[in-house]
Image (cartoon, rainbow, N blue to C red; front, side, top):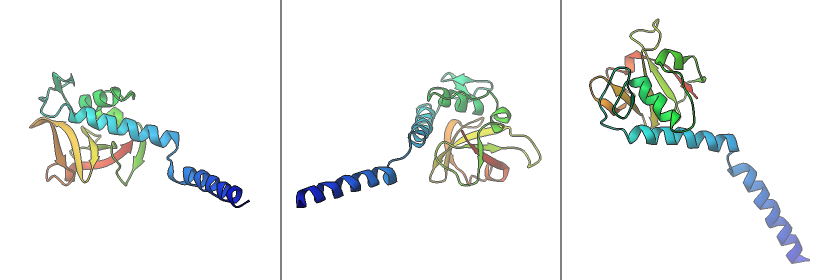
Amino acid sequence: MLKKNLLALLLLAAIFTTFLVSPSKSEAASTTYHTKAISVAKSNLGVRYLWGGMSPRGFDCSGLVKYSYSKSGKTLPRTAAEMYNKGTKVKSLKVGDLMFFAPNRASRPTHVAMYMGSGKMIQAATSHGVSITTTSNSYWHPRYIGAKRI
């Protein structure tokens, strides 16, 4: 009798833990493709900036994001401004969120980067090609206009 009660208790604990601890399939898939997109972008660190570039021969900002997400199974529009019309607006950044920048708050986005976590973002910038910088970077921080989760 004690063995049956103990077995039943362990079974209930296992079921309860599964529902509390395991992420849903959509959360797990989301984490996977966001993480993969960041990995793809990181594998291209140092690739030169090329206006209109969408391959490891050269990237512009939206080309890097589009390429990285494409390799992760997600299709995105071509430009930063078009990407800004997709996804869900977020205030609290998570890994893989797209960060948008513009010359001023009234402008449409002209630059996009991917949030890597820990206050860092990866981007293709004219001055450094594919590179990692901080979200508090003195050039980009004042131009930040929002983020979207794809």
